[in-house]
Image 1: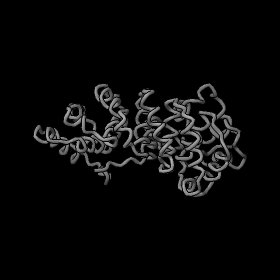
Image 2: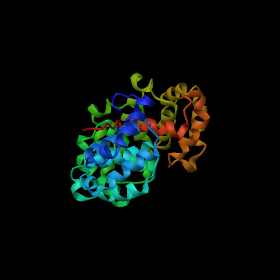
Image 3: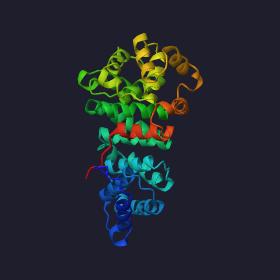
Length: 308
């Protein structure tokens, strides 16, 4: 999976091997988590494989030894497959919020878990609040991508945590973090902050300047451009130059872009507004299914990698 090898025959043969009782029953916690992650990354769709891996995960020998990273990778795999697996989630979510697991949760684990919960629509207040508290404490160790993914997930879940927002804005404004942000990172950040109507210091100014850097703006996709335009307009932080450049990327005039981002204000606080707009923009973009491609891009933004 790390090598991006998506050969169906190879994946199928590997899946058959994993299903061998001798192999399946010998898998330890880290191995199960890595297998879950790897097959999800290779887009292997096999309910038989997933159910057998779920059964193995729920065995006490595995479940009781899963680390924060292992839990994050399994829930992440479910999110990639868009499967709200009730049995697994019922066991993994309480374990994820156990104090001894939370104490070892790292920035990448937090971003991965929050993103995955948001994709699956899992609302667990105790877990998200605990993850946010941990994130606020660890914010200096977050990468720009991880901070953007966390902010996006919080907004998608409707989880507002003042300590996280305050520390995140301060962290992202640091030059070394700011200059590493890509277009989709900026889109996730400004969309989340605008969703929460959170504006402290000059964060929108800094993010606007980063977005307008040629190397960043040249790689902004239509859906991210829409998110940015809506967010900057909503927070009264858009200038003519930004709107002109975003409109040019989307092959429309500035007035058309402004009309588009203002036409459906009742949905402005949710990502669904931008997912529905994808139908209008498909011809200008890559032709992928709108919601699926949006989630894939944010999966890429999270840059979650399986670790042994």
